[in-house]
Length: 271
Ligand code: URA
Image (cartoon, rainbow, N blue to C red; front, side, top):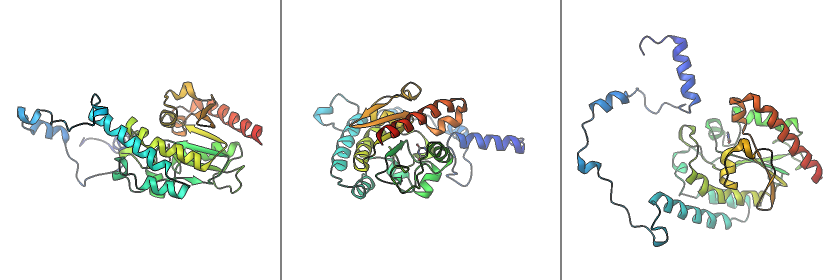
């Protein structure tokens, strides 16, 4: 490492940022490989698994994490159903203490754009810029999203519902190091997003990427799902390639363009 030149060091930093390691958590580096060599081997008693906490009868055959998730999903369903408007829903999300991401995030990122817009975009989770600004899709992927929307006459800053969009993420807190939300986190936040869609009442929903499809349709495989309209509760929904994916695979921008045209045609058909 000492011999690393400037350009190699910069390339390694870029690579780490790409992987999501974009924040220093201590002032001096820790050599984890060195620590592993020094660590005494753990005595057998320490290695034994911790005794299991008693599980509710209904979940007796499930591992503890699954039972906890089921409880969290039920609690999320209850809390979201009680919300009568978007302000109430925002308060319910903010008060939902069962998602571990709430504890590590700097702030809640609830939504941006115009509630009541004809189109609602549902993304995955906020990243660093989104968390800083408290708004979804404002970083690099968000800027590409804005351009994609602009190409079909939509704008998150518009004030008339026909040209406006409303934007939110299934997971409203930034996962540490921008890791992907776990299936459990998606499952427990999905009831809030379903209620969010019901209260915002768009004509059409765009499911941006795999996480939104997994949470709301129970399906993954965005390259297969994209471009095919589905019904989400009562609302037509279009799975699309996430703008972050398009940065990795710019050759797929033509597919995204086809989906944008499909969205535009559907909006025309509704007006
Ligand atoms: N990606 C998302 O899915 N949502 C954001 O808000 C930003 C990036």
